[in-house]
Length: 173
Image (cartoon, rainbow, N blue to C red; front, top):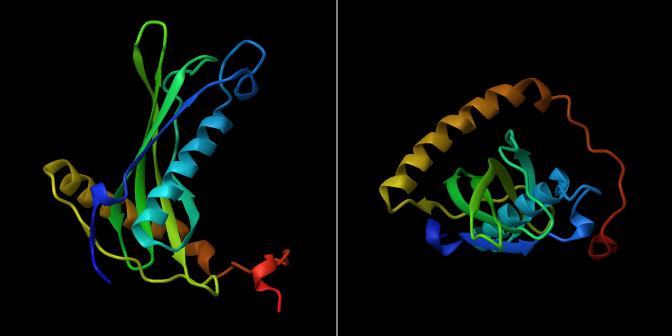
């Protein structure tokens, strides 16, 4: 499995916020922004692995500034770190006022995705080659965050039980 660079999977999504994305006073719902964040993260993870990926965690997301109906929202996502089966993706959200051109940082988050094989079991992912100083710094910082996440979730790992669910059509014999 050949390692990949950060630039090989990064993505930027842009979407104009419409009335269906907002409350009656014009503020965009946080859930709509978080959905875009998750989609961008999933695209990066899928581009890196070329496999099915699922969201394992989303680190804290603070809404620094609001987005409004008519804003162009940018979701910028790139791979920060890769371990054996999981990946950390950094996502930055910005809004642009199309009338003034002003860009506002709305918030940022780190998402962890796990790659799955055809049997929905975690599968090994390609390594990551950080090239720039910024990518190397983000890689090292992400490695530390991963250790913290592992310690935080350790007590829950043994109590996990698969719940009954609807099987996807391709899984039915």
